[in-house]
Image (cartoon, rainbow, N blue to C red; front, side, top):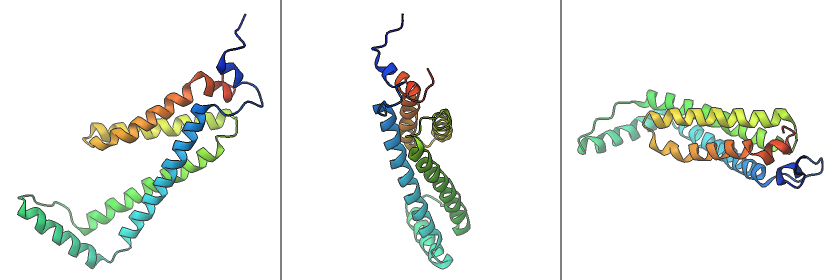
Amino acid sequence: MPDFDAPHLEALRPDAPMPRRVVTVRTLMFVGGVSGLLLLLLFLMGLSAPAEMMDEALDEQAALAAEQGVALAFDAEMMRAQMSLMAVVTGIYGSLSLLIASRLRRRTVGVFWSTLLFQGAAAGILLWSLLGGELLAIVPLGFAAAMLAFMWSKESRAYFGLL
């Protein structure tokens, strides 16, 4: 006979409050989404600078690096291309994160799986960055892994009707 006093089975009730783990994922996704959109604005601000200003700033940086015995291997066009790519990535991440977080109150299987797929893709990209030498990717990778674990918990699955 099943144990109906188990906490995760309480989440099956139609009037059950959102489990704390889902609330945590939702909050982290809102924070990540807003951060992504703010980074988008920051990159757009950098891209709006005139080419002459960017060339001048890069020349100053190259001079400072040369004093340290380091040669800079990029120019203004490469910097603009990188900033454009990062603006697209952070904008898409921020928008999707906010969209999914705003829909987590809906108790549908689609919302559950879209959250898992989104966080799984983010974790995969961050792991690739970490393995490529970007050591600071470990922080957001930890958050993505925690969100995946929280969403896969019995309480969360029960809340979305997946037990």
